[in-house]
Image (cartoon, rainbow, N blue to C red; front, side, top):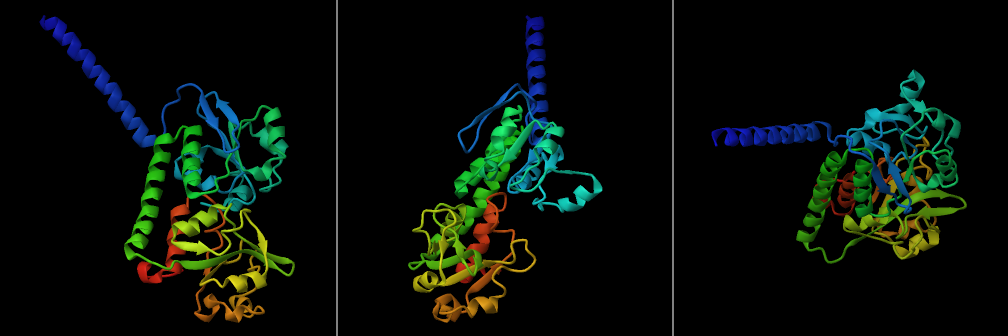
Length: 325
């Protein structure tokens, strides 16, 4: 009998040891060991089966690249677009030969991509014309295109699953969710009756003005931050509008990006915005509530989503968040 119990004890100790090693591995790497194929259904409903955890990744989506680094698989990236500038200065990497540039955001070089022999490619619908060609060559393409905060968080989990980093992706999502909830709770506790209306300018030139409609993820960010987008009634993602309509809708806050990567803001300067015909009657101008936010912050639906909510909320309710951008 003693021999039997001793054998059982040895088996239990062995099982416990293996379990502890597995838990340690997951915690250290943020990913699970390779365990056969991985099935992914992307934002377009396309199903892709990966034979194993990808070791060579290409990102054609600048919004995806920071996520890959955040969940601990950035070292597997072999190619990026010329538009990638976060979380590192990749242009310097390209020049030094430490990373391969696979073309522009909407103009990927298929020959370069193929030469890198990637196990997986992340893309957006900007490259819809190129995606079928890549798939015909046997390349595995995952398309992402979140239109809300929840979809952004789901996308992070999807990327984690596709790259074998589910555990780390879940940690990131939990952190972002907590940070967003903190903003929402503070606004709810303030019991604000009249929420602040806002206008966000995506682009402006003599031919017209582009803003964010209800079809955009930014609209959800604005709502989550406690604001009312004056163009939330427009279902398009990025609808065109006019100065006359903006004046008529009279936002309490105006938010502008710093320069959108062009070096010079498309709107010229804040003084030029204030001097637009009829804009002197807008409440945001009268009360000097026009804010310029860092160009990259509101440009991508990705890893900075909690920061987006925090910064917008600070613009709308400085009395609650102590500071504004």
